[in-house]
Amino acid sequence: MRILIAEDETVLCEQIRRVLASEGRVVDVANDGEEAAFLGATEPYDMIILDIGLPKRDGISILKEWRNQNVDTPVLILTARDGWSERVDGLDAGADDYMTKPFHMPELSARVRAMLRRKSGRANPLFQKGKIEFDLRNGRVMENGFPIDLTSQEIAVLTYLVHNTGRLVSRTELSEHIYEYDGDRDSNTIAVFVTRLRKKLGTDFIRTVRGRGYVIEET
Ligand code: CA
Image (cartoon, rainbow, N blue to C red; front, side, top):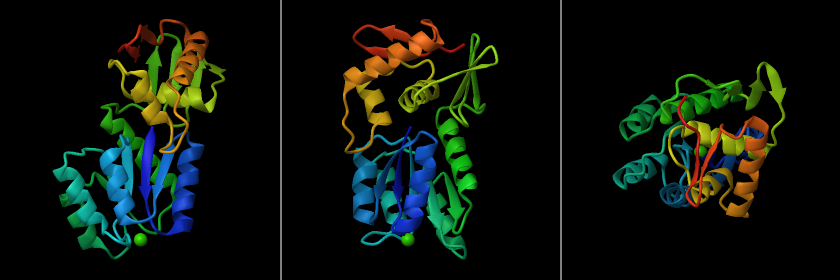
């Protein structure tokens, strides 16, 4: 799942980036409002973390613009401790959730997980299909209670497909959600990841629709 962080405090921004990346998210960073507005409107993020107090453009106006452009990406806003009116404005402008600074990283990552699940209509963090159980909280896969080792790219592909269960996902779409903005996107590599996943999880776990993409059927 690919996330945009728009935050001008570079230390905090790097902390958030590191935590989310360690959980298998692909993260792009914008350090000012203009860059944030541009990336959020043009790249297919799974969610956006938006600081309200950004240089060049404030977060509320960016959020209003996205919503006017029908960008419906879930947005979590970051506000100052005493910024209750910002939170009201932010929620009314189309934010889905907020965090007040300073905050604890585990709370932020839990909110990120909850938002990603909500976006895909998946309230349960455990995904089960046949003998395979996939825990969206930590990316662990078990078969009959025994762990299966997956690489971070395999987890990224699996996570995106599970969040889109029942829907056919093309290679291009997959590559847009598992690589960063300036990442070296190669849809042939996606085919390699899926082949490995099918070997590890069983060939009927992910269905390949020749020339069109992949789907994990609803159980
Ligand atoms: Ca700020």
